[in-house]
Length: 413
Image 1: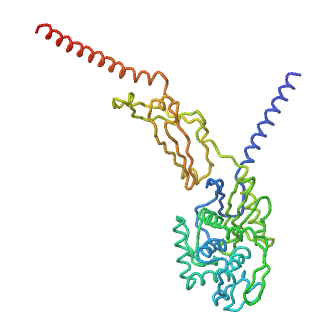
Image 2: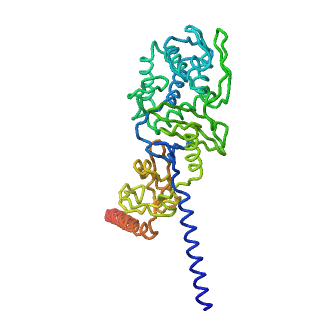
């Protein structure tokens, strides 16, 4: 009876432990979000950590203004005065002119204040101020936007409007938007505007606009910058940049729900960012494992110049890792580069070359080594030394024979 009770207890413990392990594995499951497409990217390494439909074309709404801000920075100095235009005044909310105070056509604002209003308040009218002060009209400005898109090597983006108001030909993807966001954040003046929680901007005629950043996550749990967006066709969109312990990650969520309290897109962002910071890359090749074999031609004796081939096992001495997601699996490339075929390298004393692991913008090199058994190289080299030894003996023999003949001739004379 006691034995049966002990057995039952052990069975219960086993099942409990198994359940605990299953639960632990499930905790690493992908976060469930309302956004139809999203991505997170490590800003130091450019590694894609999380993705959901990241290459699907989506409407970006006001996250478009990050590219508008890049063109403002490229074409105007902070102190340059920009003129408020008729097309700017005709823009719908969210606009300074519609939401806060009417602005006269012809009034002016500094480029620095326009930048803040564009990114902090997401002012639709100020996007047109940028477009028509940088180019002669919004149509010409869209050409500049798409030239910038080409420079950034974005394959699935095309912009029509400077503020992101809906147009069926105005689209991007979460991945492409992450590239735009990272480029924008590199610009100190754009970064400053994205990071500001509040400011007061002014026109030359004395209008003052107290504005707050529309990014509700700013200053919370490491969120240092971002850009919001919304149109009915685009849904709620958000770009957010986080810095935790010196590690920066950018997140993009597109086509999330716009609820009355406006919380869904921000909750989505927190979920994918928290998951991304907790996620470790998976091991692609374990350290000290054999990657495969490579036919390598080498010179056993450097001063002779005769080549010999060997089938060399290639060894990696470090864990090779990557983030396991559909984009990375699709784009993963492994390239072996043999750079050193010296005897030392073939013995495994120094690296043979490198293994390059890449996915899109990410690339990392690992040293690779020969894993040849010691006797293999010796076995390969011995015949060469034996041949040289025989040639040397033959040379000595011939030389001795010649000297003997010469000596006999002198004696005969």
